[in-house]
Length: 207
Image (cartoon, rainbow, N blue to C red):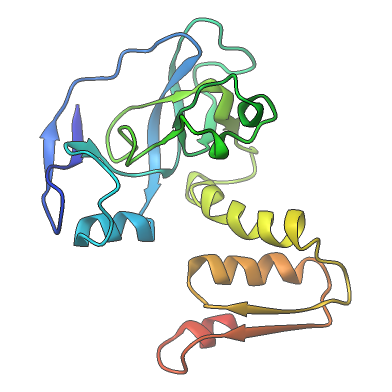
């Protein structure tokens, strides 16, 4: 299969390469990516600002797709399901964080697209535990932004516990800031203050 591979550390060093198809293993699913978005961290790895990986490695972690193969002991999923995945490529499955569903805090965790191979390819292997079915009403394009949306949801809903009538200031109107603004609007705030540099289109988009 064809994949976009980061072949070296530092700037650039990305090539389209023929790579082996992942072999499905127990508790995992093989997904055909339908839409893969470009995260700011992907750009930082391309430009050399991030070196948190060992090349060669396939980048990409913000994606949606279709299940094409199931490993043993996979429940509640089937071939043909339209799905999104969390970004946890591997984790221990036994620590306090894993058994309480907080895989991101597992000390053994390796992320898709920098710890292990990611989604800029024809097939990606993911633990079934972190795969979620897409609502029928949403497109692959919409659901590929799920991972990005989770950050402001966690911050505003789980941590801040935003309530109707609150006022909120959001620093930075990049992708996550704009999503945070939209999440905040759902809670009926008294005021949302969007903060960014005056040049460019970010504040205009926020308005």
